Image 1 (spheres, rainbow over the protein chains, first blue to last red):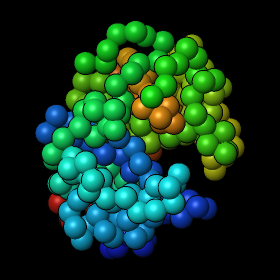
Image 2 (cartoon, rainbow over the protein chains, first blue to last red):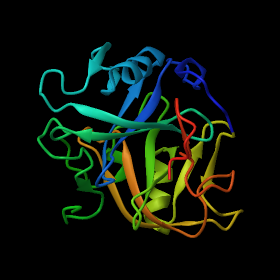
Image 3 (cartoon, rainbow over the protein chains, first blue to last red):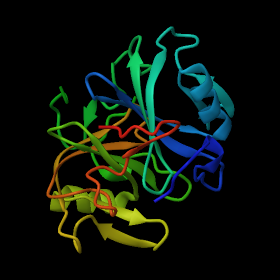
Length: 115
Length: 115
């Protein structure tokens, strides 16, 4: 169990990243999972919008900056090992690039829609 | 966007793992984040309880096997890139080894308890 004062004290992986779960603060739906380094966490705190590190594009990424589907940060939680974040947000639009509200819209071994 | 028939078709990282978010199917609280390889996902499907790969102990891990705090799997979802899982569960007890219901019980830059 870890008590933290700053994002630099979180436990990042060998690649300098940790996973960030984004959850709708109102509906409690899990919207997406992305990755952040300490700078992205710092930007998330400072701007109160979600910032990530894109592993494929190797660049910082402010969710919704181009699409308009921003995520206003309500609260940032960290887990017992301080190696994962849960960010509760008020989303301005769909989280998924497919237009779905959540990126987790398909079920394994099931054809039924999740909601 | 990826349509899947089996856990082997999910997109695993260079270490053979993907992150697994565990969410309470009833309260929708996010309980924990852990990692799984294709064998752990297969065991989760087959046993309808959560299986992970422990990166620190380098072994498979059936959540609750020793503590009794098992997680009965209600549904397994995968995200648009098929590189993260969301498992909805009915938990038999606390998810966290600290005894907290969720591992995400602390807030960054806040002293208030999350719930």
